[in-house]
Image 1 (cartoon, rainbow, N blue to C red):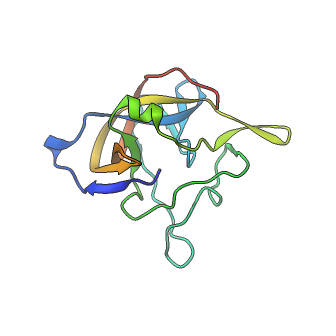
Image 2 (image 1 turned 90 degrees about the vertical axis):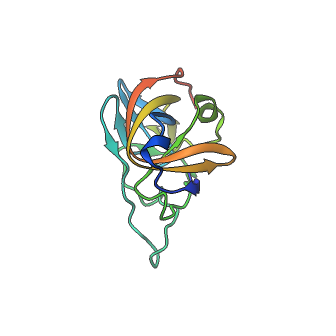
Length: 159
């Protein structure tokens, strides 16, 4: 998810208490981000990972070089990471926007020669730390340093 930065370092009075994030469910209370496959657990604070700079210090499409315990589907892709997105979780302002957004769901479990992708859903998350206001394809979003999943707000759907 490559967001366009609108306002960096929101003051505390403008920070949202909750945001919504599209995830893939990998087990009871266990989720992964659908584009990069980072593990997140229910009711556990998770700091967004920093990314290594590759190819002459440019941020690149990283999903092909990431080592994850989950299988990547064929022809997976991700947005290039820009400096304002590095170390920040992409999240949506509203549940409806998280549901409607066209996001790639890259991960699943291998069954023979194919990868059956994990189901997707939207979760409600609490935020803390640095938060930036942003947009993703016309949707109001936030880039957040820390997220904690507090509840599932949609039913998991097969991809």
